Length: 218
Image (cartoon, rainbow, N blue to C red; front, side, top):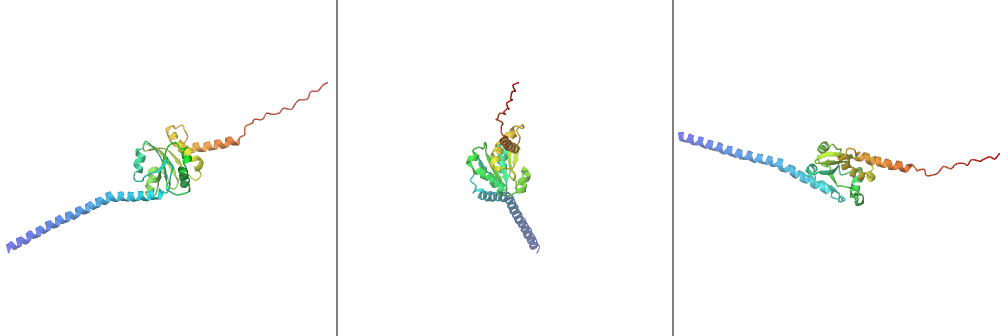
């Protein structure tokens, strides 16, 4: 009888030990699954988003000096390049489409003196807006040097994209390098105003006629 009790006790202890091992194995598997979810799911989501954006913008055939950033590596490219010009905007809207039309035009882009990348704001809009101080609905072009913003150009509805975009883009790096050079937007605007005012004033080339004085003979 005593031996039976001891045997039952040993079997029970052995059963508990097996259950502990099984529980530990199950917990370990659950922890591994959770770690995998945190590591792989964001990567898979990023790939899906990148694929969707690529599909969205693939219909746009831009000139050689313009290109779209890959959202998976966009931040790294901005931080690592010595100099980079980036357009931040949702890939839609009247102003955005006007800009894209210029970036498609090889003749107009021939006057462009560097290159530009487009950062389409589709996902994580609030995060991107906060990080780069932009408004997704108002296209903003920022010139970066070694990952730091040096100059920017906001393109609103009053901006004459067809005539002012390329000169303003060319001015972005110059204004950043030389503080005495006015910002791109103001320079392009003043140039347009100066041209208009110059054309409005006609040069005076006529010679004033003098009325002859009659001499009186006494």
